Image (cartoon, rainbow, N blue to C red; front, side, top):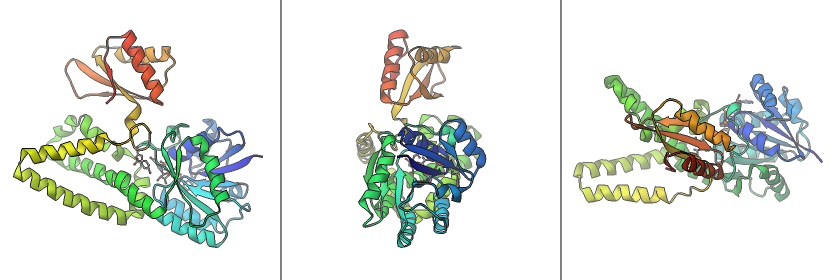
Length: 366
Ligand SMILES: NC(=O)c1ccc[n+]([C@@H]2O[C@H](COP(=O)([O-])OP(=O)(O)OC[C@H]3O[C@@H](n4cnc5c(N)ncnc54)[C@H](O)[C@@H]3O)[C@@H](O)[C@H]2O)c1
Ligand SMILES: O=C(O)C(=O)C[C@]1(C(=O)O)C=C[C@@H](O)C=C1
């Protein structure tokens, strides 16, 4: 029997989810987006099976509806859904980065007999839109679900089965704990990244050359500042209370750092960095999740015309696909560092072996 899954919001996450769950031949994916061009593009790219242009009419035919919209739009849609005619037993879910406000709303849907099981795949990117969607985006990442208390186990299992082809690690967490933990590892770091970029921007007025010096470190720590501002506006508004707590902690940490610097005791400073290195190095890096760069391969290449096509040609010859390619301009002398991203660790390993066997370039994983 075919299960009809309606995905509302066909951006990076909705599109990636559609591509993954479409792998199940018993699932029919219908896609809706506020932007009708996106719906057509999703169909053309093979991201969805069927297009929806009237949300309420398509919702009436769905067994599962997943909102993959910015979180304030999701709350709005959850208000609207109360007036729709839906199939009996329909399961509603979402992909939002915040869960507390959404799950409060879910409780009011429960009171009128609607099942809403919150969801949040803990993987993503600073890129947005359907073009950035990838079927394997959630592979090995935690896929958090937040059912309301006493939710029907069969409904939860049904949703978990639909999400199975994402190959995410499905984990149940309550919404309050979810919002606390994601504030620490995702939402607050985002504010820090944005504020560092603002700091550079004002510094740049007096010293315009500063931005030219922004090398690997600054780029790595601020990558996420290039994400979709609307998505982050909504996340930070919904999780503002947790963020204010994180900000208080951060300010007191910065006071400690300031004192440490003023005292200039080398052993204290060294200990501070050693401790941070230890904790950072212990982070799990085998899964995707927040560790976006885990499938990057760094290649030391000499600076001569055609060197990039030489390397990409070599990978093409071995049928290894790449997802991204960039030059890290940290050294302007003889060498540049070519960074190539792969879909899987296996692809990266095969690439490293081929490059080592067929060129003299050194490769390493940062
Ligand atoms: N980007 C990430 O890294 C990431 C990771 C996990 C979860 N999320 C969450 O997933 C959701 C989607 O994020 P994304 O990165 O795919 O965003 P996106 O900007 O790539 O896509 C959002 C899509 O939703 C559409 N949309 C907006 N309002 C709508 C509405 N009212 N009705 C129908 N469509 C509407 C937009 O047109 C767009 O196509 C957000 O809630 C976000 O917090 C994002
Ligand atoms: O890798 C990134 O660019 C992300 O910002 C992904 C990220 C994260 O903070 O880890 C962002 C928001 C999501 O809710 C989940 C994942």
